[in-house]
Image (cartoon, rainbow, N blue to C red; front, side, top):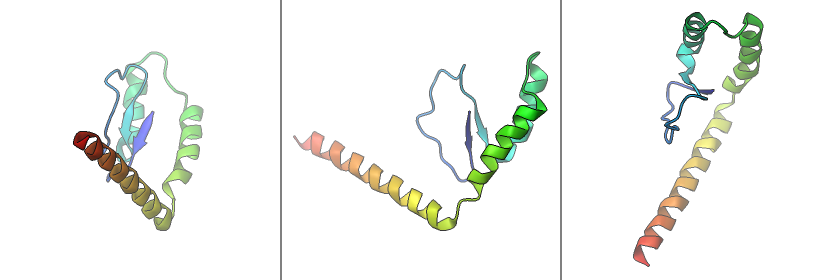
Length: 90
């Protein structure tokens, strides 16, 4: 299960989604309820509560950590672009 915030831009999502599900954080609860209602076997309330208890602390990351994460992604992307340019030149 991939859960992302409203500002996220997801890339490279696998085409075979039979074993994965992707949800926007804002719609997560509604998505899970719909999924539960559409299947005979679904997640128990306890399981969903357990997932929420694990996921909620991930939402309270300080802005400084978020900024550091963004900078790391930008730095890594720049390294990839540099390597691709270098490969094209040679």
